[in-house]
Length: 240
Image (cartoon, rainbow, N blue to C red; front, side):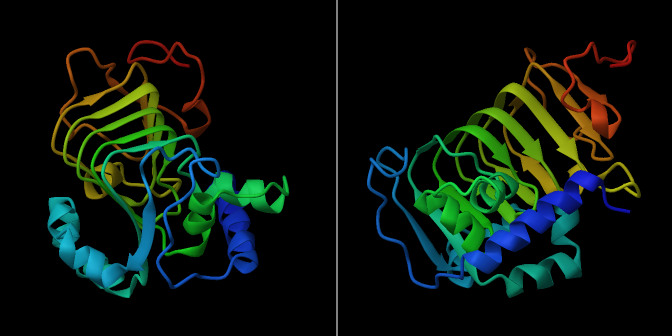
């Protein structure tokens, strides 16, 4: 049974998709004054071309590479958003945030937010990624071929790969968003070749114990879904 928050996010994303039709052509570089993407134009490209160029299938977790359904799903993806070079984003990388902004707040979206809603939500950064908030929920996959350094990182049931190190300055969350989660969803969905560091690491039916945490990082704490973002204290001895 899916959680209430997942249902709301799905509805918002679906509503935004209706309002924003798919753009099949590559996007031109984004003007600096329109979006905070310093020296980081992006393009929307055919997914098959992108998957082949960056060998994305080989970057999946070992468990996902053995799963026929996963491989089949990648074959069905139509488009990918690609950044060449290091990226600094002021917008949140979040399907639900962009959908809320468009459908409820009635705010104008940036070209990047429009692309998030209009594409198949496969994102590739051929460099380092710096951002305020990264949320992989409702996305097909996020592949960063450098380091990730963001204020917050929330991982859901989407393929996530980082070639370098992952730093979440405020918190790192992992959630299967499913009452039937087995606890190893994180191992299937998340692969980080370097180290992981964050002052708060919490997961719910996910599990990030397979990752290599840096010495200065907090330990992962398994919590109930409603406690993922609480101020604490949350650790192995104290409940939230």
